[in-house]
Image (cartoon, rainbow, N blue to C red; front, side):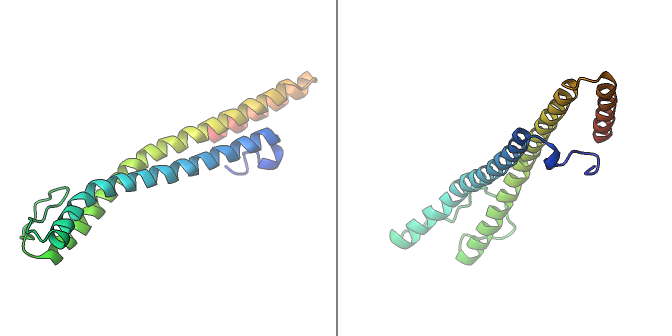
Length: 155
């Protein structure tokens, strides 16, 4: 596919800038999206742990150990702090994996749409260049070549 497509040097500076802008925009979107998922999950999942720590360490109260997701376990973790922390870490990691998996589909759609936008703009620019040619034979030949190249890319 790389051999069939136009390289950056053959594109106009406007299109090169646009391609790079879309790539930067996609990378920035990914960073912000991953950070926001991590922050939201952390706030939700760390709340029970913080409450247990505050009650145990600062207020010296005996409170039950609670977990955010409430997964059923075949063992009792109410009397063992080490098991509670281990369960909490496992639950936290599972929740983040699920959140990232859900986010991955959204990210895939975003990348696909950005990629299609870039391809459409390159095709549009290429057809503009062909239509600006004065010789009809050269224009027709270039148009057939461009259509063939783009149809190969769609396969």
